[in-house]
Image (tube, rainbow, N blue to C red; front, top):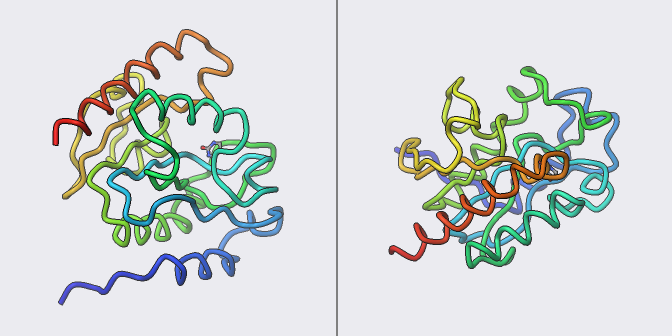
Length: 187
Ligand code: URA
């Protein structure tokens, strides 16, 4: 018998109560995820930053402004998609997620994915892409290519924060979000 899906509200409470790793000690609050629970597209980022930790909502800082602009290029609004992260708590100083943090936190993302059951998972940057695709191939090679993970179509894209420091990435981000829009309109 397949495992029943855990309702998002219940998962949100489990995340809020989590103390499975030391990131819990430094957080203002957990950042569960936000958006349409019936979304066709689940967007997966890396981890909350300072603004996300303060507001409890993913992608509300500068990377979030970039993401909003890019979603528009795909013909999407934030209300159309569900946005979550690999980690639900902010790593100190926005350092990279550690393997042991990814290991204890990702059962939440796995359950979110089962419950939302999207058609597409858009992975932003290396951490989300490597986790969802179980690959060591980097985002530079994979971005803009349609992949499959189980029943999900996976579309890796650079992390929108990459364009804050490297404007040459912006064009690739725009192209990939335009391609995402075309894929979504095909059906
Ligand atoms: N970067 C991420 O990967 N996620 C956020 O929520 C914000 C910035």
